[in-house]
Length: 173
Ligand code: IMP
Ligand code: MG
Image 1 (tube, rainbow, N blue to C red):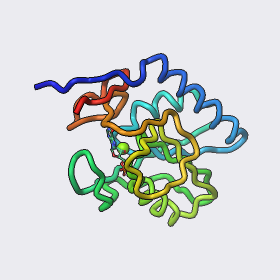
Image 2: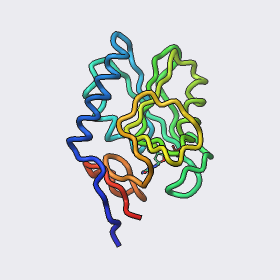
Image 3: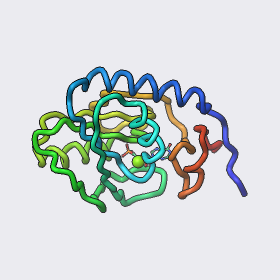
Image 4: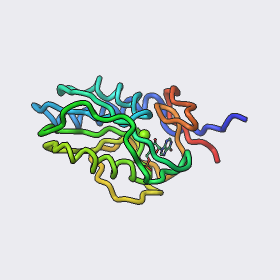
């Protein structure tokens, strides 16, 4: 049976939020060479929109993480399944996520990236879902805050479905 989808953000609202994040990031990194690390898979849609709005020069790489546990709750047992290929030493790194939930993925990733000795690391997430946060992670740029719920669309999946929806929805429990 198909799940019921409740609208959360329209295409226009998403576009406005992406533009405003891009303005802030472009201002903060003006004159710098920014190194963007996207967290696969969910981030590919947001990242594609964001980089096209930035006015600073960027290099882009991806990391893929696997967290063992149930499909909808992060277990904290995180491993990399695709490594970074860019040399991050002395670089200004911006980690881009689709959604931060428990914080366990970002917490792991920040520790993982620090071993490459970047000059700076910041975090940008399109959605900050605060209700189930387990680790207080620093998030420097946030597109939209939600209390809870399971969101799909704009890259976010449920069981690999709905990534291609241009809007964001909440799955009705
Ligand atoms: P965290 O480690 O709990 O912060 O989980 C982050 C990852 O869990 C995200 O990058 C997503 O892949 C996934 N996730 C968490 N909440 C949602 C959601 O509402 N929809 C889709 N994926 C989610
Ligand atoms: Mg993700």
